[in-house]
Length: 198
Image: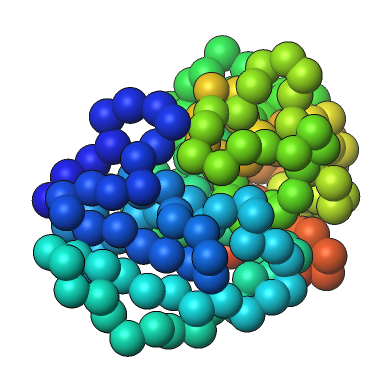
């Protein structure tokens, strides 16, 4: 079991590597039954690639992986993509029952799977803060089922493959302790996570 401790991300951890198509994938974590990795930007979009895991010098059989243009996924505090979202306010505090959002507040929503950016990001390397890497396929957001104005959509500076979508809470959102938040890209909806709104 091992986690990456430096950037750019390594392509080998705990004597394990993963090859997607003709590229080695940057690894974040390797453990029993689980490997967390970044799909190389160079793998392309809407393609089918072969994935081979090599551990201890032994390669697995190849498995096919379809890489989509967009497959938005939201992070949650529980780590399973459900319940309280990994969503922060402008002061970098979790937007939950102890710190509910209000109409007009800006939310920082963290996600994966939003696809290509301009300028293009570099595989395994942290996203730059200047210039920002902006998502090329428009992202929509809903808060409590209401369209929320998107103010930023791109890679979160300093992180590898982590997207950030900043939205403003609409005035017409019904307050509650578990208000649903969803991102939509290319007609594909993300999983639903929640925030608190007062």
